[in-house]
Length: 125
Image 1 (tube, rainbow, N blue to C red):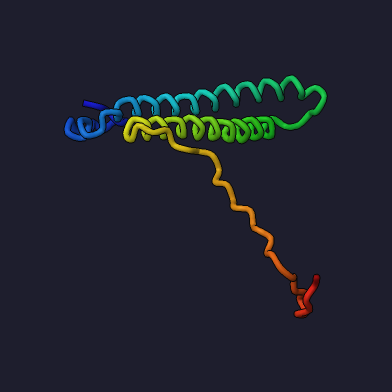
Image 2: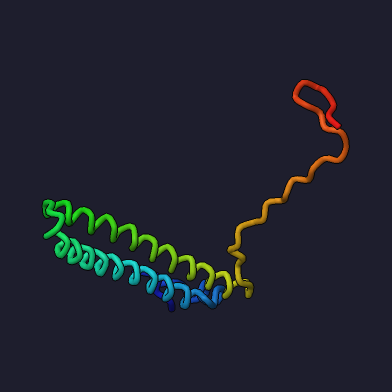
């Protein structure tokens, strides 16, 4: 039986998706990395700002606000990056193929052959 959060998943579903346990472990690891990056980021930024406060004095609430907001953005980025890797793992386990994450190539427009017309309807050679 596999646990997803506090919910236990039925054995029939686990048998249908054999990679579910690895995916759940990957997601848990991704969320813990995000939480850890938030805590370490907030503490690090707070300490850095306390050291810089001698040169740039400002109130404690701004120090806290900047630390929390910046570490939240960083934590979101880490969690999103790790969750994307878990999604790729899930697709690999289910389909056996690595998903293509490269941006689609836009077709280049071809130049028309022949005389060109201006906006006014005149033909240019």
